[in-house]
Image 1: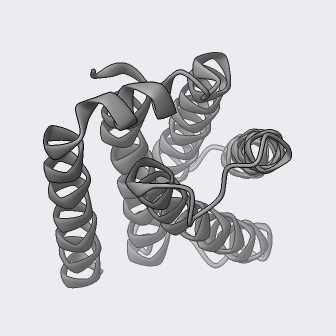
Image 2: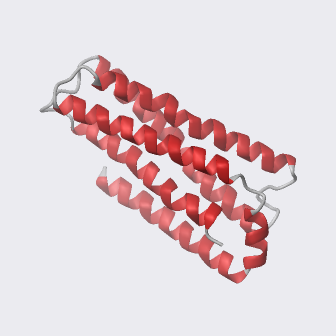
Image 3: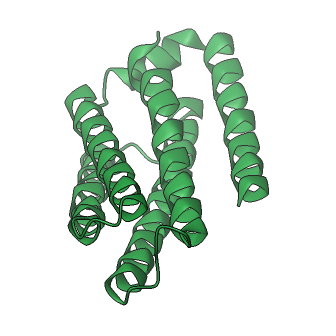
Length: 174
């Protein structure tokens, strides 16, 4: 799992560098593009992903302590994480309605590719959380046997970490 996470972080790092380079070469276009975004949507997504990650951390901790609350925490992380998906799709819809898409300019190409790639990781993370929830419900994770749960939690935290970098890169930094 660590090799996969490092590989994914490397891909995102390269995309971040490319986006930053393009921004530095055409700051006027990027500033204009940023002004069409919804920073409140980005903030809601940040809070949703951080909260979902906190729920996952609570679930892992509860399993380690052999507490029954683990399932509830893990299950709660799923709808909270889904808030990101709903808000991001709404944001895409708003931009497309205004006539912005992948071909508009370098800003929107970078925006849609970076956030779309991240969105795919969020969807995969939700699937993993669902899979782990089923396994937890079936009693597959014990305090001495939680490597699968920890691996899935690490993936979800990686998705969260990427957004914590992506949000300021796209929405905040001028």
